[in-house]
Length: 325
Image (cartoon, rainbow, N blue to C red):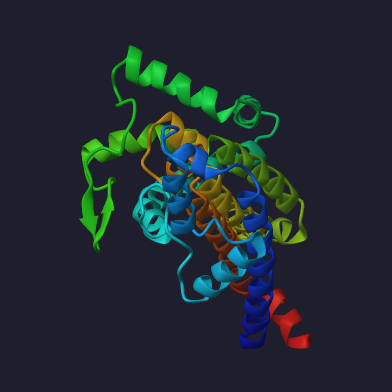
């Protein structure tokens, strides 16, 4: 296992290096932040001072090597707009995004797993057909439209939930969270459900197909022949054997939710990393954009490593294959 982790870490460093080059060139080749950040009335002397201060007077290859040198020490640059380290800005917004993403994943599992099991156990029943029909909507409806409809129905017409913002927060181990207060939960519910809708549908379909396949296996037939209760068969034999694909997809989707929560955070004015990156793109705040993209790549790498390690816990055959390899 140790050799596997070391190999994956080395591979991850290579991936980060390649991605840093692609992201750096892609972001720094598009637009000129000076045109956005400096008033059109500024003279050439003022513009030259700002260009030198931002390090934009150097050639692109030299800027990249300076970036790599600073990144090795944990410095991914200072924000052009806020004159603050880019990582500091991102880490300030990260708790809000992680809280929203975690709530969305939790909703995906809590709603998707039992609904998928029900649809798999009764595929020809009314409940199973209704669940599968609703899951198609989860794949089809655009996120921004669902968010606007949720605001219109539950906030504007019914007045049950607030339209935007994060609400009241409390410190948990020094980190501000909103789920510890009723006001924060009310603000969290709609954006979390909006972000989770696609993943609920995904978990439903994965669980349904896995349950139907597991019910046809010999070990389930043998368990029924032994006279085991149906709840034990489903909870122990069926559910345990369909968890691997579900864990894989849910873990990878957690990274996707963090990366692509931009639309939901913008619609609901949720003060997370997604809203920060949108604001940074508007003003071409290059250091923040690069730092955000590299952080997302790192999150995906770590999640993939965790998924591979969880395989060995959920499936002993993985440990056996590693020992033979």
